[in-house]
Image (cartoon, rainbow over all chains, first blue to last red; front, top):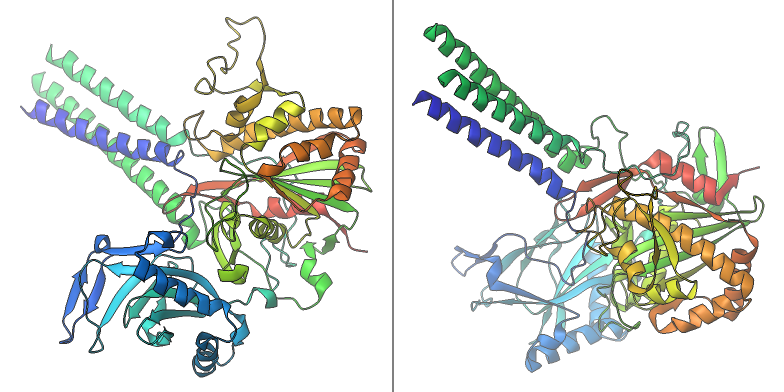
Length: 253
Length: 352
């Protein structure tokens, strides 16, 4: 009985080891990057109702429609979306005036002319939400932003026909590049950034004097050096297991 | 005897269990560091990989690279041409949005050095992680995103704005060099150009039988010929340089090795065709113009053709570095020392 129990333990542990090694092998054939047309919702969202009670909304109940897919919106939604988007390209629009006021008040060191729309998309929630008493929907959206980036989130108000700027305290850039936003209402959403790339000359190649002499030029691809190590370890574990079982059988004969 | 047998059996079993636990611990630790090591800035003693740029006000200094005490500047006598392929078929069409879904699948930067009379081609891994320039609504510059260079082309309408964003990314990757001209093509162009140069001969060094049953390495025990040489035509050429997930070890690095071989063969055949026909390149560009985005007019094409015709065979370079599994996709981190040296060797000269 004890022998059978030992054998079961060995089988389980070998299976664990093999699954870890095979995970590494599969990692080497993981997909190359593919673009995402719109940000994805990260984790569950929280809606705070009029009484201050938090209600959890699952990511599956939130639909984000990218700019490229705006044709899938209903005619009414598309009309609102097009009206909202057109304001960004009209220098005489209310948005342009409101942006200057907002930047002056919240980002005094930034030139409003340097603020550009980085993303625009539509958000829809499966359940009916009421925002008439200051309720907010907190969402975390996927992205590639950096803490310290000047990120501004605006939401189009179809009743007033204006883009509402979300309070900077309700927009947080997280360490993993996502942004957490508390939306006072939903409609087309635009994420703006202040473009500072023209004022800095950062490069990927290390240009500082701190460089020591680099290794001799080979220009050859380094390759994935660990690709054989882990499967070899797994194979070794299997061989050990087989040897162990053989020894056990030999002793029991 | 029986008691001794049971004791030794227990010892063997315990030793085996300890070995298994130890191996699991080592594998887990290795996977953890490999997948998250870049967040801690170091992987198993390799150099810290970081974007070490700095803000500089002087234009010349902004382009300078220092290796030790030696200063290097971009060489104005090096003509550069960026060749790229996006991962989609069909003619070049404008996206309905400020972004598109056409990623760069292949990038090669050709450098003709007038002083050294040399032609060098640098193949850039599409999974290279860098601060990629982002274009927002209206094609305006909207900062950068740390991601694969493959995504550089997805910003913009899919036309020249996207191609030039890719050029911008390559220039940024290589210390701020200037790319003189570019041609970015859809997948359909490759079989056409391949056949126009007469096909490309390559040696099969790994099992590519999924592409064609004959694409297997030679077995010296049963084969009279030491290697399997195949002549790529049409869509076989495209599959040879493009296919990844279900061939060989499935890595992009393996695919780059095939691309390196292919480019060498293609370029040599191109030189022959250009030598035979002084109008070849114009004709080639014209044949694939529906699949091509380029800043070359007739004059530039002739200039490029002259370089191909008068310079010797190309030396192919690739980037050393490490491919890692990111949160979702593969990420390639170039070795900074090697990248700096290759950049200096191909595109820079010592400052006087």
